[in-house]
Every structure is written in C-alpha cells, then in structure tokens.
Image (cartoon, rainbow, N blue to C red; front, side, top):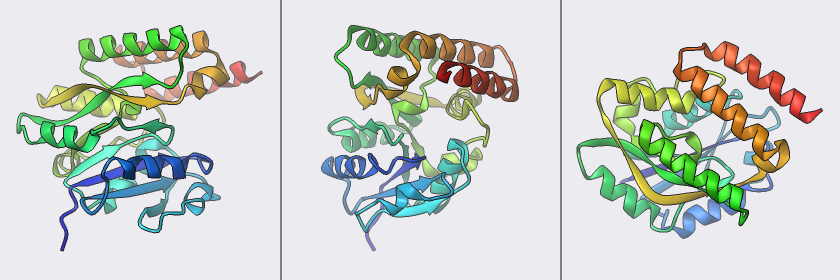
Length: 237
C-alpha cells in the first residue's frame, strides 16, 4: 500500500468557480500518490464538492465554520502531514519539498508560509510585507498562510477549536504556549485580493487589526463574532 505523506485539506463555502483550478494547481506541484486532497464543503447545497471534476479528490460535507470543516477533513486524513489551505489561495512552487524539509527536523511540529496577495497594487504588496513582519514578531501565522502540522500532533492537542472566528490564531497560540516550535517559511502563498476589493482595503485592514488585538487581549470570540458580523453588514450597506 502506498504511503500517503500529505493530506491537503480545503475548507470551502460556495467556491465552485475556483475549486477545480486550485486542485489542478496543487496537483501541478507534485501532489500525486504521496498526497491526497480533501475538500470539505460547509454549504447546505454542497455546490463546491459537486463541481469537482477530479475523481481522486475526497469530498466531504460539514457544518459551516472553518474550524469544524478542517477538523472534519483531518478526521479522515491519512497523510502524516496535514496542510490546511483556503480555496482562494495557491501554494508556492516546491511547497511539498519545502514542507517535508521542515518536518524532517524534529524540533518543529508544523509551520506556515509567508503571505502573498494576487495584486500588482502597491498597497497589497505593502500589506503582505507588513503581514510577514507581524507574523515573525508574534510567531502566529494566519490560516491564509497555508498552515501545516504533523497529523499525530494535531490529533493529540485536539485539533482546531470549533469557534466562529480566530480558530487559526487560537491553534497557533496554543502550540506556542505548549512550548512547541513552528517554522515560518519565506516562500509566499498567493491569496486572492477579493476580500479587500469587495469590502474595502482600509476597512478590512483596520477591522482585522482590531479583531486580532482584542483577541490577544482576551476579548471573547463570541463578542468578536458579533462585532465582525455587525461591521460586515455595515460595510455591505
């Protein structure tokens, strides 16, 4: 039986127009017999998994929420290393080789890539640079940086907390507090600029900074979620 080294887990919500290009991009990096792709659809319609053309992809349905969806994917994963990637993000060239090199070093339990944004606008390039600086200062990467982690360690610490916001930050802080190390690779994932374009660059930047700061200061996720929803509705009107 072939050994599955990597499990790429994609939490998705209404991503039918993007999911096949992401799967093709992952496979182009050498995701073959040693790698499986698991897409976890959080919509009632399951429109994302219904759109998948590749028959080798593992398709799951789940309750909505990235923490729940990523845990659902991890529960069926066979890979020794779990890679969590958003549906609008692409892994860099040589991603699997670089992840493997990191995980061969026993001092690391996981890691993440640096952030890149698919835009030629100066503000987005500046944002990506500032995000890299923040990440290296705090040692807390976000989920859109393609977090990877040893499966046995992920299961041992209970996976993601199934909370409405900050599940990625919470996991990384928990690992940090336990005293384990994660590796921050300089190679950049490339994530879509659509969130900033749709809601407004300045608005998203300020909102996310406020949310992160308040969470670090101990404000409950429930209060932050109410703030996020009210601010999002305000931005849409």
